[in-house]
Structures are given as C-alpha cells and as structure tokens.
Amino acid sequence: MNNINRTIKVSTPSNIAFVKYWGKKPVQYPLNPSVSMTLKNCVCEMDISYQSVENGSFINNFLFNDQKNEKFLKRLEKYLNSLKEICPYLENLSFSIKTNMTFPHSAGIASSAAAFGALGYALANIEREIDLISLEEVNQRASFLARLGSGSAARSIEGPYCIWGDHHQIKSHDDYALKFTNIHSSFKDVKDVILIIDQNEKSISSSEGHQLMNDHIFKETRIHQANQNFIDIISSMRSGDWEQFGGILENEALTLHAMMMTSQPSYMLLKPNSLQVIQKIQQFREENALPIYYTIDAGPNIHIIYPKNYENDAENFIKTELSEYCENGRYIIDHCGTGACLTD
Ligand code: DP6
Image 1 (tube, rainbow, N blue to C red):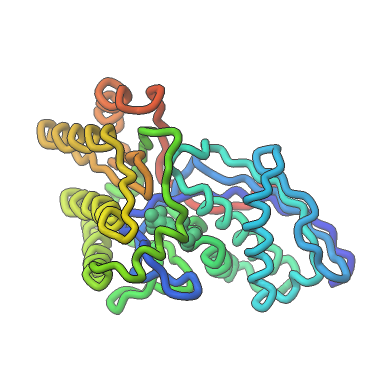
Image 2: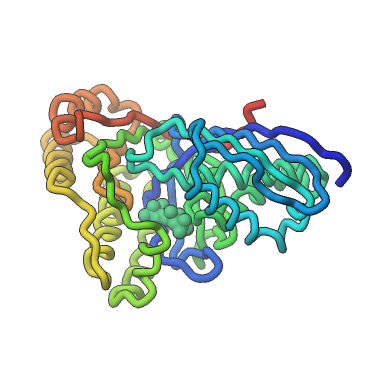
C-alpha cells in the first residue's frame, strides 16, 4: 500500500434484541441465534483517518465525544490487534479516530454495538477502497468484523431487522448477521421508546454476563428455548401476529433477567420502578387492546415496542403514566432504521 492518506466517515446505529444473545462460544460466536431491531436515531458517528506507515502504530489519536477516553481506546487497540491475522493490511496503517454518540451512555442502549458496528463498517469500506473486497461484500464483511469487537454489533449494519446465529431451519449464520426480509407490513415502521429508569445503570459488563451462561444450571434449557423463540418470532413477524410476537418479546426479556438472577454469582438489575412500569404496560395493553409490549436489556431501563400507527395512544400513555417512573422523567423516542451508512 503506497502513500494512502484518507478519511472515512460512517454513521452506525445501535440495536435492541428481540430474541437475546446471551452466552457465547469462542471466538465471539453466540450460544443461540438472536433477532434484533436496528435503531434510527441512536447512532455512533465515526470519522476515521488512515495513513500508510512502515509498521502500523494503529491509533495515533482517539476522541470519544470530543474527549480522551483511555478505557475505550484500550478496547479498540485490543480489537485491532486481534484482527492482525485476518486483516494483514492493518500492519501498514495508522489511524486517527473521532467518535460521537448521539445518545447518552446511561440510556440502556448498547453503545458498544454502535461503536464496533461503526468500526467494522469503516474497516470493510477501507477494504473496498484498497480493492480487497467488492461493494456487494461490504455489509457481510462489516458484520463479521463488528462481531469480533462485540457480538451484538454484528446486528447493527443492516436494518430494520437482523438475524444472527446458526439455526437448522433458517438461513442464518454464526459468523455474521443478515438482514431479516419478508416481514409483514405492520412491522415496517416500529417504535422503541426507552424509559430511563436509572441513569446510574449498573449493568454487568457483557463479558461477565455471557460467562455466567458457561456453567449455568439452565444453560441447555435456555438454548432450546431461544432456538424455539427465534423460529416463532420470525414466523410472527412474517404473519403480522403481534400477540405472538409480544408474548415472545416479553418472555425473552424476563428470561434474560431470570438467567442473571439464577446464575452464580447472581445479579438483580431490575429496579422497583422497572417492575412498576412492566405491570402498567400489561394493564394498559389489556384494558385498551393495543399492541404495546416491552423488552429489556442487561439493565433496569425498559424499551417499549409498538407499531408506529399506535404512536399517539402509546406516547400519551408514556407521558402521562410512565414518565413519573423515569429518572428526571427522561425517555428517548426512537424507531427502526436501515443500518450503517457512509456520511461523506
Ligand atoms: C443482553 O454484544 O454487548 O444486549 O459480545 O461481549 O460485546 P459482547 O456482548 P454484547 O451482548 C449483548 C447482550 C444483550 C442481548 C443482545 O443484544 O442480544
């Protein structure tokens, strides 16, 4: 590579899992397949300048939301080092990286999915620029590279929905996520309102969390359940069966927390207000016969999922009855998006 000196700008969203990835096999393969919705507004904007050098010094400059961030820089360096074998060209490049998250850290939205999604997408585009891959191969390669940084990041490249992880009945892969196609029209525009129950969200680190599954007493049962939920949620999203979809969505959220509560050591990440909100949502749904369901990540905040057609009823309910359970009344309104893109 001779005298390269370029900048690439990407924007990559976070995603919220409907069927959860929880537990992994080496190297960053999921124990079970997962399904997710790609977000629209909660994105990582990343500018990467790269120059050819004799021996790659990797990251010369790194800014995260306009500030130095040693912890994240270390994780990025470790990631790039781990890629040296599959991306030998890295030996001859050095990088300056500027990263900006459009959503707050404490929001219960995975920033690592957006950040590693952005890096994977940027690297795949660099590979295209230096003629290692074709344009058609970019997304698959980006998802593959993103996965090696953070498993769920594999699902941030395409949208509005992705599937990731081998399943014997569906064409999906452990290596990278795929865009999930042939969805029912009622799933074309879906909203996700994230209620900030606790800003000092104390979620366990993902590596700790996934490790809990290694010796979990319910490990095999969980894998079996996730495989079944995977196939059933796909079928409900194809047929437009919101009742079946919502049942699986909430079952997955509660199972994730049940796995954490019953692991050794155990974790209780839900707060009293998380439970209050869950009950309110169930009650509101029953009384009004509306397709409004929840999911939860590895933290106390609650994601409310519903078709855009119902946004008036749902957002009125959230404002008048749920915002009081949020810290400082805060919640974030987002909806499904189309995934990563170049911004320059
Ligand atoms: C609960 O992708 O953050 O959000 O692969 O170790 O980076 P690593 O884990 P990560 O795990 C996400 C777990 C989850 C469920 C999900 O997004 O599927």
